[in-house]
Image (tube, rainbow, N blue to C red):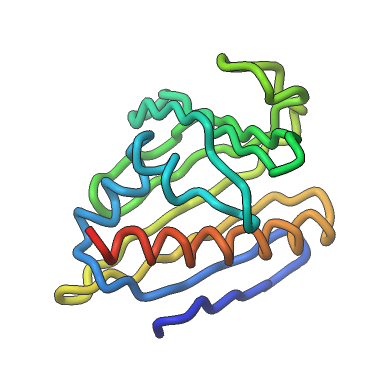
Length: 161
């Protein structure tokens, strides 16, 4: 599978699968590197990622700031619950109320949970992102669109490394 496969097994869950033409270790490092995230995190055309903070360890936090062309910010923050390099990450995902600052801000308090798996398949990697605990079907579907675009830009970036 080269293109994204998106599954919605229930109202609060989405699963995105894609095969990457990149080794497992490189895919993991590219997903968790703040410098790299700023280059590929593009949930919508024209969006930029002005800053990313990644403390990739159990209990470590992350913050990813995305900015639309009109200047509106969408800043995700969370905490790593499981880190098994280069195979698996589990972390919370919440939105900051005002994500325009450069430091961690107050979050909405409605965290969802993300599990990312990097499954070795020879010289390729099966990438599986499972995002759960959505409050609404609308939120799940909006995230499905964003993650689908992000998976495309991530694959394009990692496959050129």
